[in-house]
Length: 331
Image (cartoon, rainbow, N blue to C red; front, side):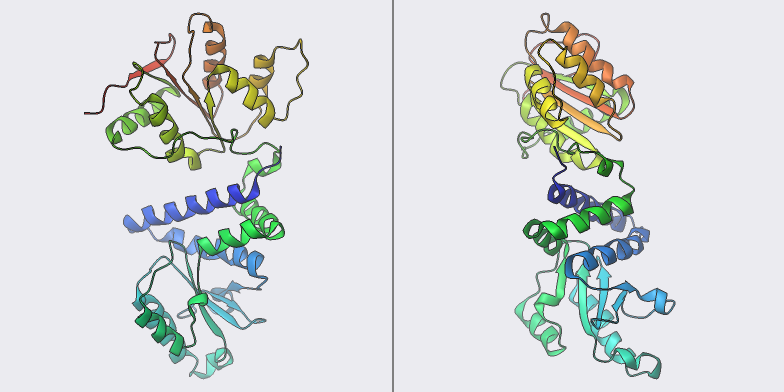
């Protein structure tokens, strides 16, 4: 089964965006410089431009970050969504700059912005001011524009996928196994439970395997699936399985296995899982008949002895040989 390239791209761009937000809050700005080069290549893939880093033309090039001398484009790459960033720090500075002899060659270049966080939603008055400076709303680009192009054009998706694989040195790109091992990932919304989610994260980080248990109706499935949605971008492979049979069936498909009738399906599936590089998060929901399935459960839990595995189980019953987290009613 081939990697779903648009999903991979969306997840990685979302991760980069999230990383930038967190680093900016902590006043760490190195990621912004790295993002300039990442998105330079991606913008070239998406729009067919020939952008280069402006600092390659002149060290500490003022006002803008990327230049395409063929298509006459200059781009400011930023996480700052204020109107002053585009009006004063970019347009005004660049207009002033091109009056100098050293930069006159760029006098007819089109100014564009690329936002590495969500694009700003400027008021009409601001857009009119930008338009007077020959900067249209369509010149304000962001990650959502890349995702639209990727979803609409398989050729663009292939180019961006290859670029991200090379930049991120992602071993998953050498694999035919999709990052998302199951079509469904369970519920992606939850009300409350912040404390419980933090505690589940703590236990999983320390033990690599955790059972969330409790009586029916406590929300075990919901909290497990939400945890997966919350953390999936940290993992190279992830999946949400509705019971032990579903675990084997879905992985046989995802791993593109052709298991003969008399072969031990679980053993083969688990062996193939250990061949996957990177970090894996496996969520198995609503495990039943614990005594009957004791050996199967133990074989799955043995995965945590291999590098990169985290296993989250839910059940109404307790299971031996695994850390337990009792989920109570929402207070």
